[in-house]
Image (cartoon, rainbow, N blue to C red; front, side):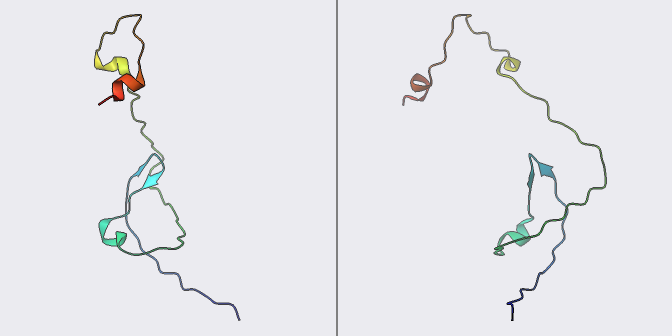
Length: 75
């Protein structure tokens, strides 16, 4: 006879950010080997974060500037 495992359900609301669903603190202590996730949405509206580019910070760099990662990370 197959070893049947019971599934327990928990329900919570969360925000999805970059494909990650944050689990409320009260469930984080539980150990989950496997989980089945069902996502229910109440809105089809999706807002996108504004892309921020380095130039958006108002830094003016010389046209011939070359970034050197080793020099920047030297401590």
